Image: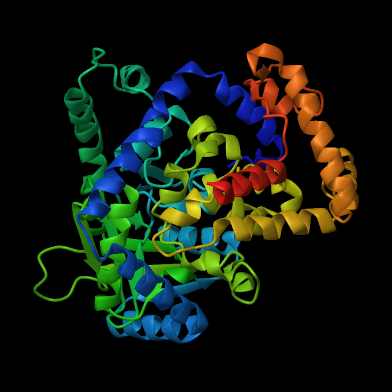
Length: 472
C-alpha cells in the first residue's frame, strides 16, 4: 500500500471537494453515532464495563509475555502452530511459505486490518498466490483496486451507484440499484471461490490464552466459510489481541458491537481452536497463528502503551469531526481517524506521518466514546511534541509558537494584546459579524467564515458576569 500521509493536506482538500464522498460520509456523521447512543442507553452498566475493560487491558499489557506464551502452549497442545513475526516482512514471508508448502494457488480472506498493515495481498499476488477478499466491502474494494477507508466498514466512502458500476464492469451483468440483487451477485461470484480455495486467511478480534482459541466477529458469515472450508486456516493478528479467559473475552464483546455499529451483539461470533479433530464435521486440517509485532513491543515501554488497549471498534473515527469531513483515505495509510493518528507515526515514522496528529480539533469526543478509555488527544500531543523536538514542524509554525510562548509568559502583555486583538477582529467583521478572509488564518477562512469575537476578552466577560451575579 502506497503511503500518502505526507500529502495529508492535499488529500483533505480533494476529499472536501468530492461530492460523492461527502454524500457517502453521511452515515459516519449520523448513522453510527446515533445507533451507538441508542445501544448504550439500553445497557445501564456500560460505563462500569468500560472501566473493567480498561483495567483488564492494562493488566494484560503489563503481563503480555506471559499470556502470549500461555496462548502458544495451548495452540500447540491443540495441534496448531504459532509463528512469531517481529516485522511486517517476516509476517509476509511466513504466510507465503505456508501457502507454498500447501501448493496453494488461491486463498480466501476475511476482513483483516493487520493484513492491510503488512501489505499481504500485493505480496501474495507478486509471488503467484491469488488472494480473494470475501467480506462484501473488501470484495468491492478489491475489484476497484482500492484500500479500506474505515476499519469496520471498509467501503463506507462509496455510494450505491459506485457499487452498481463496479459490479457491472466486473460481473458483466445488467446494472441494478437494488442492494439485494447486488448482494446476490456477490454471493454467486464468491461461492466458487470459497470451495476452490486452498488456504483461508482471517484476522482475529481476540486470542484466548485459556483455550488457545481465536475469535472473529462478522455480520456476513464469510469468515466462517473462510476458516472452515479450506484445508489450511491461517490467523493473522497482532500481539496485543490476547485476553486471559473466555469470560474476559465476553466482556470485550459486550463493548465492541455497541461501540462499533450500535448492535447489541455482532451476528457471527466464531471461535477457532486448532485444526479439525476426529469426529468434527468440518474445519481445517492445519491451523496456523501468525503473531505480528511490527513495533508494538516498543510501545509497551513508551508513553503510547495505552494505545495497545484498542479493540478496533472505530468509535473514535465515527465521532471525529475531521474524519467525518474528509474520510479515511485522506490519512494516507492503513489506520485512519484519531486511532490512526496515534498508530501510524509509530509504524511508518513521525517523519512521514507528522501531519496526522495535527489533524485534530482536540474536541475530546474520541476519548469520550472509546470503550476502553484510551486518552487519544494526550497520545496525539505526544507525537506533536516529538515532531517539534525533531524540528519537523514548519518554520512558520515554530516561529508562531515562539511568539505565543513569549507573550503567554507575560500576563500583562498577554491581556493587553488580547484586548486589542479582540477589538480589531470585531471591527473587521463589521455589521455582518463574520470574517470571510483573514491573514494567517486562511486554513479556516478558505472554507468557512470566521465568527467575530464580541470585542471583549474572555476574562473581561467573566469578570462582568461575576459582578452581575454578585449584584443580583
